[in-house]
Image (cartoon, rainbow, N blue to C red; front, top):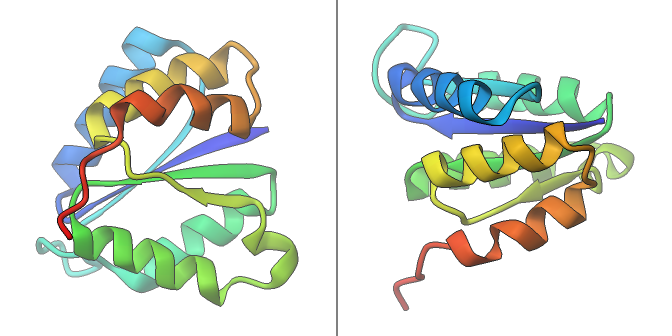
Length: 129
């Protein structure tokens, strides 16, 4: 099973992206993690790690994030996983909303994580160097 983990500083953003992706893309396992435990805006490492670990225990996980620090939180969580789980997690720099929609469609159609990541290539955000 391939899951989609959406990371944001805002719970409203990831919940909205999940709703749109499920409505347009069909049935996919989408896990939204937004905001902090206290309900404020921010990236929450503990919640991100717990969601990532649980999803990776069930299969491959594609991670999309809205901002750099949310992605960094995802990267730190991935690095903290045991080797067997870490290799199940793929961070992707695709735009959050567009990426969630494309990934949900691909996952619902039964595509593998790699096939889904290949489709997301045209939605990658440019890097500032």
